Amino acid sequence: MTSSPHPLRPNALSLRIPEPKARPGEKLDFGNLRLSAAGEVARPPVDIDHTEIRDLAYRLIRVLDDDDRALGPWAPGLSVEALKRGLRSMMLTRAFDERMYRAQRQGKTSFYMKCRGEEAVAVAQAEALSPDDMCFPTYRQQGLLIARGYPLLEMMNQVLSNEQDPLKGRQLPVLYSAREFGFFSISGNLGTQFSQAVGWAMASAFKNDRRVASAWIGDGSTAEGDFHHALTFASVYRAPAILNVVNNQWAISSFHGIAGDNDSPFASRATGYGLPALRVDGNDFLAVYAATRWAVDRARANLGATLIEHVTYRAEGHSTSDDPSQYRPVEEAAGWPLGDPVARLSRHLIAIGEWSDDAHAALEKELVELVRATARQSEAIGTLATGSKPSVREMFEDVFKEMPWHIREQRQELGI
Image 1 (cartoon, rainbow, N blue to C red):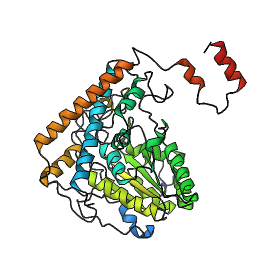
Image 2: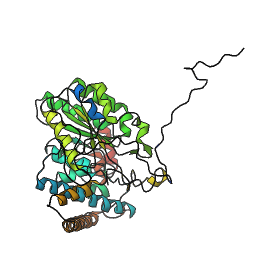
Image 3: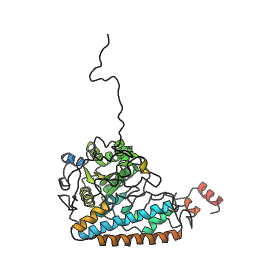
Image 4: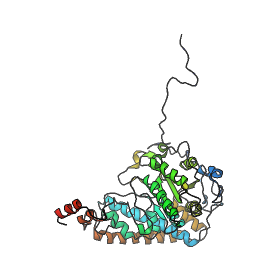
């Protein structure tokens, strides 16, 4: 006699392997996006208890509607000057990106990573933070440096690895570092930025300072231990930090569901740590600014950290070593439902009568020429392929406070 399987115990288990909605050649499908209408999400006071706003981890803060109007309680009321400054910084970032990408294709540098489609995540935060707040970015927050006025020439020298590279050839191209501009060294292993930012924020609070830390990681890095370590310390010690998860849908060729976003938004992970979370349209400059200001005000009020998930899209490949057409439909970037951050802010300024298509075209031409002229200046110093390079002697400097005897001997053997 054979027994039938128990209704709650199937004969065989099956493993779920998350898959994106569409692969190359398939029809676009963004049905997994959790969207809210512009202006419909409530804006709570910064001193609210995190248990009362758990829904904000599942909804989406949006300010700009389909007609480019700023709606709802999150509309930040920025001045026209601030909006134009933000637009200029995003456009300059894009022009810089394009020039450096071409430089890599021409053999003038070994590697580059573009941030096209994600410019608002960095530039709007730069506007919302104070200049002396410390940023712990990824390799797609070059907009922070540009918005804070870091010299384009210095950035290009670092990318081209020439003699004037401010990092003396010790970092990969695009892994910038500029302490005087509140820009912590970029780590290729992104998860560490969260842990370091929380530690820096804890030190700021311990010293009774007023500065806060802001850190960025990608959606894939939320699956790493550093993410959870940082949230634990941020919660326990009430660190004044803004912890940004840039959900650009792809961690190299792994879609965001591999890191766990299919069932619950990344922002919802803050709940288990007793932290407030916001989920924001990362392609809406006004929404990113407003969410950041809320988190910054909360941190400066000694109320602790906030996790912000920026829902955006990586329009280009992961890097110049990546071909996204191998794992996603080629038209997916153009079909992204939340649009392009530069175009949306430009249209908003036009809608309020403070901008025009002609003004936009003129500014774009001006910035492209600025980048072109700066690139010529940098390339005259040297590139990866030609010109002067940092001295070999530099690899012995700035490593030890007092150089050990064996390192000194090695340098002497080289005759430098």
